[in-house]
Length: 282
Image (cartoon, rainbow, N blue to C red; front, side, top):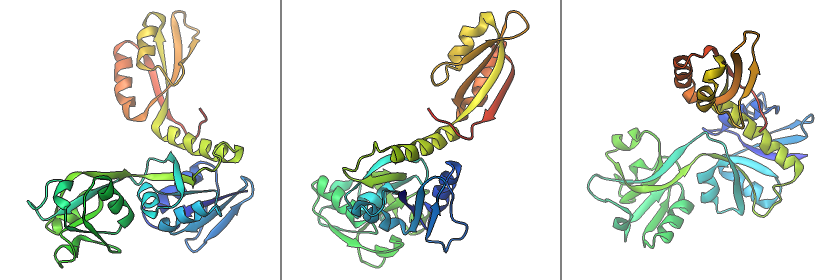
C-alpha cells in the first residue's frame, strides 16, 4: 500500500485534495482527520504540515508527498521532485525600500530577512554574494521598518503587501514554485504502484488542459481542418451518411478552443461542439 503525504492546510491543501479526488482517490471529510485509508486504491494518505512533508518523504517512512517546490528546496531534505502539478504557482523575489538595490550584487554585506532561509542562503552562495540571512516565521514585510534587515526575500503574487509596506521587488526572481509530487532521492520511480499514481495525476492535468472537439466538414476542407485540430496523435475522421462530408474528433487546448471554433467555421465546418474531459490516459 502506498503511503502518501498531503498538505493539511494552507494554499496547497484544497487544490491537492481536489486533484486527488479527480484522480479517483478518497479524501478526508473533516479537516481534523490526519490519516485515511483508501483500500480500493491501496493508498494511505497522511495529512501533514506542508513544511514537514519533504522531511517525512526523505526519511523513507512515506513513499511520496505533495508539497511546494519552494518548501522542498528550503527543507534541504534528501527528496526530489518527480511531477509538477500546475497549481499554487508563486514567484520568490527580493524586495527593499525603493532605490536602495537594483540586483543581487547590491546585497553584499547586507542582511536579508526571510521565512525561507535554505532557499535564500543557497541562492546567495551560488551567486557568490556574502550576505547575512535572518530567519523569520510569518510575514517579513515589517523586518526592514523595524531595522531587522535591509532586504527581505519572500513569495510574491500580486505585490500588494509589499507596496503597502513601502517596498518594491528588484533583481531577477530567486525561483518559481508550484505544487509538486516528491519522492525520496534515488528511490525507484518505475514501481508499478508509483507509476499508476503518477499516471492518474497526469491524466487530471491533461483533462484540465484540453477539451474534446467534434465537428463536421466537407472532404475537400479536411486537410485545412486537421491542420487546425491535429490532436495529440491524430484526429479521428469518420465518413458521414451525406456523401462528401466527414465527422472529425480531436483534443484541443481548452484556452484556444474558441479561436479554433471560429477558424473551423470560417473554412466551412459545422456542428462544432466541445465537451469537457474528466479523465484520460495518454
